[in-house]
Length: 300
Length: 227
Image (cartoon, rainbow over all chains, first blue to last red; front, side, top):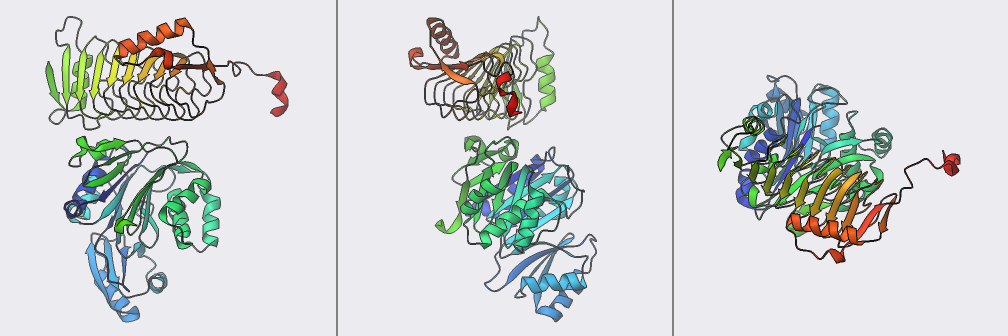
């Protein structure tokens, strides 16, 4: 089961309401995933040389102020913004050093995402509760992905919630299952890709991270994925500037896409797209098997 | 005509009302507004009602239909008219995957394109598609007719039993045990009648017919070594 949604703004007016729209889409997918929910929103890029990292701690009253003071003292100045039990850190601290320092001194703090623009928020509970806990409706941004989870293969925890990010600004949400994820996980670890869970989706995200780090474009990475990822899947992928959808060559897992002059959307079911303005008049199609649909900013 | 707005009332109320109409009811013409991708809309109808759905539907619209005429003025999600027994379901737009799956009777008309696995496991339903169909259409089809006025995707009619497939355009590839067959007068007559009932204008003589080679019906002892 599980539901996935994605929205890519083509106009500033949609960027202004991106959080509102992706929240409505997410809530429509509650029947497919009442266990946990999450979104990845691409927004508010940090200046060149800085990094944005989203951290998570199970305790809502966690002393984030104390943590950011400690990071500032140890690694350099950071700015902190709390959102429920997640916190967004911005600063010129090298990510590898921050992650190593956290593991050493604060192993209870999880890293949810890292990059220039990506912010991931995810938690157990109904999508509507997750939307209000993180005040997702107020977020602006260029594109976003969302996931509602009905757990089938691993525990219902924040860590096991989706979306997964395995590399800078990379996010992947997924309907379906991969059958060769165990072997692939080992191979990716061998290539130095950090994978935190036993989840198959994280392996797919890690695979794309690896291909992109080898110099592939998003389309090239997905084309390679058609060869190396074995299973039934519909992927929606976000990068700093891009948004893509891919179904496996058999294409059993549900997916629908729609496009207007204002936005591009994908979802497991059309009802998640029906909530968007202009959905009834949108161009609507079922993505073809093994075909990459992608949109990139900056005309590249 | 009775209007039912799904923006104001819920789907179960609608289906309960449609399914509960007695033989003597004169509430036979319905218009459903704002379907917004709802699933299982107008399913399990057993009376000769006319239901017009104004908008795009979700999964399984018109499923298990008997006798009713359902017209979707929009696109239909996966499994439209699945397990239909009789009656007519017409989609004015396109249909997602598995249209008419396992249908036993009746007529499904898709004015636009149908996606993959159109007519999968069809068991007597007639399906007429004005546009093209996706890959694996008529997979394991057992009875009935699939008419495609456009092109057919890869592996058409894979593992087909006795259903008939008519395609006017290109066939990307045929699936296992599906072959092209001679178009005889009786097939032209069937096709003419189906196109006429579907209200689609197309010259029957321009279609090719495909069906089962019947080689998968029985285990071939000569191949025993392969297992």
